[in-house]
Each structure stands twice: as C-alpha cells, then as structure tokens.
Image 1: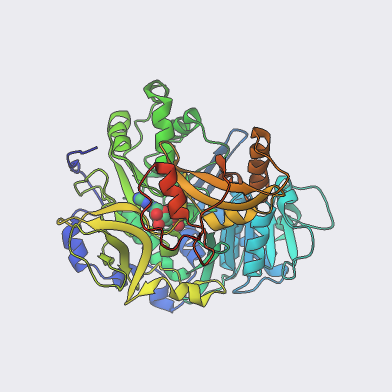
Image 2 (image 1 turned 90 degrees about the horizontal axis):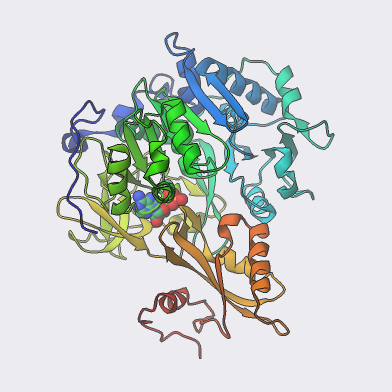
Length: 569
Ligand code: 6R9
C-alpha cells in the first residue's frame, strides 16, 4: 500500500523543530533536570513520584487512575509517595538491600505500582513478570536472577514454584488469607511508616531486569540502570508530547518493557496523570476507557489497533473519543492500513515508534511536528545516531537494506545481560549496537522496517523465542522433534506454527494436537502456545543438527527454498 506523506498538524508541540534540535541537542541538557546534577546521587522513584509530591502545586494531582471492571481507585502523587514509602519499609524490614532482586508476579493494580516504586526506593532491582506466565517461565526467571523475594497474588500462587528455590527467601502475598508460609502485604503495610529515607544511588546502579526472548537458549535478563530516566523523561516530553494537563494511557502490561518505560517512568517523570486499565481487552472496554477517563495521549500497539479496526466503525461511534489528541504505537510494524483507519476513526495520525527491551527507550520515532511517511518508523531521536550497517559494522548507503544499528552510548541502553557477559558482547560490532532487525533508510532520513534477521517471532507484539517453544514441545510424551516458526497473520502480525514429528506408537489426531497445544500453554504461557501444529515425517536439520527454521518458513509460504547445502541427508 503506497501512501502520500501525512503532513504534521501545526500546533503547540513540545518539539517544534526536529531538524534543529537533532543537530544541537546533547544528553547533558536533559540530565540537568534531576537531583543528580546537584547531589551526584539520584533515585528514579524519587524523580517519578516524590519530586512532584514535594511540589505544593502538584502533590494533590492524580498520579494514578486505576480502573477495572470491579475496582476504581485513584492516587495523588502524595498518596503514591506514601504507599511506596510504606512498601519500601516493608522490604527493608525483611532485609532487602541495594542490588537485591525483587520480582513482581501480579496483575496491574494500585498495589503493583506502589510495590514497584517501593522496590526502587530501597535501591533493589525490580523484576516484573507477565501475569500470563506459567510455572516454568516464572521458575526460569527467579532462578537466573537469584531473586530474593517475590510479590504475588493468591490466584497466581499455583504457578509459583513451591519447592525451595535456593535464593528465594520470602513470598509476599497481596490480598490473601492468613497463611504462615507467606508474608501478608496488608498486615505489613498497616504497620509500616509512611516515611522512608530513599536509598540514593549512582546513575549507573541497577534498577530493572526485563526478561526477553532470543532465537536460542532461555530468555535473557536485560539489565537497566537508573540513568535510563534521562531518556524516559526526554522521549516522554518530545515523542509522547506530554504536557501538564494531559491524561495519558499506555495499554502495555508492565511485564513488557513498554509497560515500565512508558507505563510508569515517562509519564510520571513528566508529572502527568497516568491511567491504568485492568481486566481483559475488548473494543468497547478500551473505547470506554478513553471516553470515561478523557484520555488525551494514548500509547498502544498495532495488534490492538487491528482488533479495534476489525470491530468496525459502529463500535467506535458509540463512544465519545474527542479527548484524544495524540496517538502512538510500538512493538510491531504499523501497517499503513491502520494509519488510514486511525485518520478516519480519530481524525489523528498514529505515530509509530521503534525500540527494544535492550534499548530501554524509544530510538526511532515519528514526532507530532514532523511529516509522516506511512510504513516508516520515523527518524532517530535527538542524541541518537542510527544507521544501516553490514555484518562488519560498516555504514551502508541510503536505500540499501542491512542491519539496523545504533551508535553505543544512549542513556537508556541496557548495561548487561544478567549472568551472561558473552551474550551482551555479541550485540556490539565496531561501536554499534546491532538490533537484529533489518531495515533501510531512505534519502530523506526515514527508517523502514523490513523484518527480523534472526528467528525471533513477534506474535501480537510479544517476542517469543522458537527455541523455548521447541524445547517445551519435545517434553510432551508424543513429540520426537519440533521446529517452530512465525507464520504471517493479518491480525496478530505472526502466529506460532509448530512442525513436529511423533514418537513411536503415536498417530496424528486433532485431539493430540490440542493436547500438545495445551501442554505448551500450561508449561510456558498462552502466547507461546502454537496456534497451528503440523505433523511431519522429518524436521529439516543442518549437518550440525540445527533445525532449519528458514526452510520450514519457505515451505509454509511457498517460497523458493534457497541454499540447502547444509541440509542433513
Ligand atoms: C519495545 C519493544 C523488540 C522488537 C524489535 C522489532 C519489533 C518494535 C517496532 C518493531 C517494527 C516497530 N518492533 N517496534 N517492528 N516497527 N515500530 O517492542 O520491545 O518486545 O523487545 O521487541 O520488536 O523486531 O526488534 P521488544
């Protein structure tokens, strides 16, 4: 679909002149907004909440507006400061210290946000987990990070490993009955002081671990430091275009980096009211949230936009969406069709943004004041150098496809892969962070996404590693071998398709396929379960025994199979 550029609307945007700012901006200017510039020490939780609570004009402003089908609650900056202080005291009483890992496995709720901020106030490192995770996924992450403590809710307890994990000292239960095995959140909070002496840390001290999938091995722990706040703040200002009176809604789960960088840090660093919606997705619920809360800035994902598009115009028309003034997207390619729909449904452009768990914050974006080319991810954020490079890290000319790469050293860049220095090193070539995405840059500087260079699957915006799914599949008693690919899907971007061979004594049936699907779902998570399972006599492998996913994909798409010289006999 070829579309004309969409002109920027004139108006009062935080970033008025992109080109000029890009040519002049230095990150040090942004640093000056934080305590660090005066004291040499900082804490991201202070900058997001306490700073505004200390401002008489802001302290009674709503920081968090939580709503779900069965609960409504709103907290001011002052109240959120006190609650997170209380939780920081709870943790401190339990012996949590700077650098310890404390994990959260719970649904979005006011308690989640107070706990998350409380962890950061103690100087500990927060590890938020998707509520959809099953036991194996939770276990892998707690083990790898050597987490000391886990905060969870009773309905998720059956997915928390109950045998002893060597490092997990305690579990805090939110909303449970009295049970001596666990610490009661409510009881501890009741007794905890609302004052807390924040642990002041260095910009390079750790604050967050997000686990994400690669093409091989178990999920890796992407380690972020307090310094990331500089970029969370500045992208919130210039890309989200946040202003004093905005009501902001980021639809992402905090188990995903978008739900922390842009569901917690960016809005609050900018002192803006942040809407959190609990419960499940439905078009009426989402439109209703925009209308009821008067959402003005909305950050979501192509998968959600495509579902809203399919729900039809009538559904949209039932709701008053006139509060919206700015819409953004992340996680997958934003189809030009969706942008066209957005223009009709909201009379607004949907602004694509590109970044990754590893990059911590937005890097390539569309800005309210810049003309947009539908299908393009936009241009690099000021202070960020992006390029297309070859496999040796040499820059390629305009319009040539290659590795999308970023010059090392932007503020929110990951600082390590937990326990895996080799993996961390492997991201960098010749001073460039190489993303694993392929793209090209046109002669006017716009970047165009082309695909993943590895086998990582992007299903409804979630990164799934094929290796993890394959490993789980072969744990099923009927499965001998498995190869897993992403198959293009109009709504989900990709769906997971598994090719398997069966062990002796098993034969093909729909029941078996469903049983295998459920097995992966229970073992990993719903989003990792293959939607399609095809049974084969053999799975193509290289001579060194690697599953040739590329070949499976070519078969699936009816494409030429390319070089098969390494294919096993
Ligand atoms: C924030 C986030 C990262 C991968 C990334 C790319 C894909 C993200 C995109 C996009 C096309 C965009 N991706 N944004 N693809 N257009 N605007 O998504 O982090 O879950 O780590 O995924 O997602 O392939 O490499 P993460």
